[in-house]
Image (cartoon, rainbow over all chains, first blue to last red; front, side):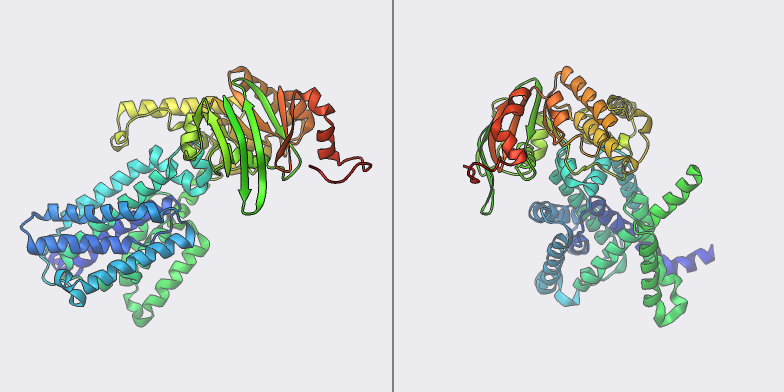
Length: 284
Length: 258
């Protein structure tokens, strides 16, 4: 088992990152599936990460409780932010959530007494074990699969296709959107909390615009047709840089090219592509 | 059942509706006609809550609809179809209807979390109900097809099935026969008569005069945002103002309306 220990010593952060990135991809899947283009998930992740990390550093709360509070606080913030912003759609919603993300980042940067400012938080206990990540990721996938297969999922797809028609079918579109937004914020916060407890160190810039775009890329790349699409997207975006390591400095370039090719040839993401292949077999 | 009292609607300086009053009875087929741009669809948008009236009151069974969210109005028993078809094109016909039917079988907020016999039973009965509605509009055999693949006329019928899934008391149809051929129109007329017989009130916007005159018990005519006539088909057909609105006046009189 020596090889396993060597492997784990080298790649544990990568493996755990796959887990947290899958959670992040699932969080953006929820809003994308309703046709909402929000980029606040990086900020929700940050709120979760700082909440859980600060609780671990300064309070005697058990790890799982800190983690849950790290998911609940961003969800509560989303509950307040949702009603005014979710009236917007398209690029306007993206702009509003982008601005919110910047507010969170700048707050984390300036509330030095609480967050350590630009220096970040150091020495966060490494509580996140592989089974914590595994259990939570499996639980999240299960939850969203049940959701997708139910009336809720059907309504979300309907909202994405025609909001007005869905509303006039007697369905409270705003409530569904808010549900997706809040649950997404909770999942992003959970990912942040887990992530903070295996990276040892966090700083405000990890939760800025770049991260927001990365999360969006996972959701779009994987596809919003099913939670499995988000899982694929999360895994791929985490692994691509590693798989392309041999390319040295050209790595980000090839990374971008792959994204462009997939979006061009399967605009609804990789999941849709696999569905097409399966259907193609059945239809012919 | 549904009353509009002195409804006005302005878009900025544009007066789309002025002093429109209508009373739709509990039963029967009520027609709303008028030239293009007369404000007919605006009336539908006001009733279904997509727009708020600038003045006036809309009441359904004595309850004011003004200020209610559209989904609340639907739940009170008013369903509609759209002039520019708004089906969920990337869903199957069955799913289209299921979206609307979902509200009926209230299976609890978190019951979806675990697979259970009760949940499966609910889903089965919802699917059965959806299939029945599709059968009512003659689309049962296409239940699993993607809605976007349907012909124009079929899409309109799917919209009716979906609207029926909300269990309405009043059904608003916005140009249901547009884009249909003669045979399809005839079939649709028969379906509408059946719907009325099943206890539903219908309010129909339609340009096809044969369709309207053959179907409606009462007709109201809108022209430039004002009601210019209301009555039985025969009376409407003979009404001078209505003829002028559709054909223009005979040229002898003054050109100004008012």
